[in-house]
Length: 200
Ligand SMILES: O=C(O)CCC(=O)C(=O)O
Image 1 (cartoon, protein in one colour):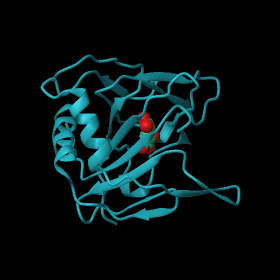
Image 2 (cartoon, helix red, strand yellow):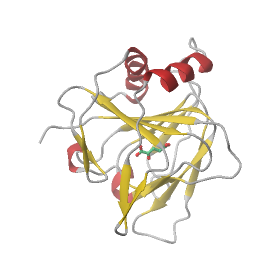
Image 3 (cartoon, helix red, strand yellow):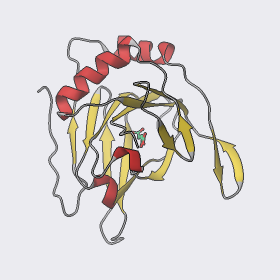
């Protein structure tokens, strides 16, 4: 396995590993260019407190044909895998030691694009899912907030370009995560969260 691990205390930290600089034989520029231009990015609406608005990021859902996934109240039908996503899936499967049949792609166009606090705890992901989150482009911080114990400090993980964050164990059960807006970063960032969706 290539990379550098940050091992975390199970009590005060989510069960996560950060592996930096995967794919040593592919350039960051090539991968970023492919993801930007070959993914069918789309804008999606969300409803918050009765108001409909655009999500502050662009998204796409790819996967095996039967990997249907309900997310933010919307059922996503996957688009078929494309070569760059298959290559990245192979790499993250080896790192995570898990099989993934789908991927949620997020494009944050600048520091004003973001994702609010949530857990990836939909029933079709099963209990204690392994989720491998590949990041490329601008470095942004992912924040983890404990769901039950407000005295536990927020964990802030800076996710470098070409890194994989593996979330596992009780991470989704006990923690919420978010990608806050930032005034510092203006460059785009792409994040791919590889998941295994079980059929109901
Ligand atoms: O962009 C990120 O690093 C987080 C993405 C995320 O939380 C999700 O797709 O559920």
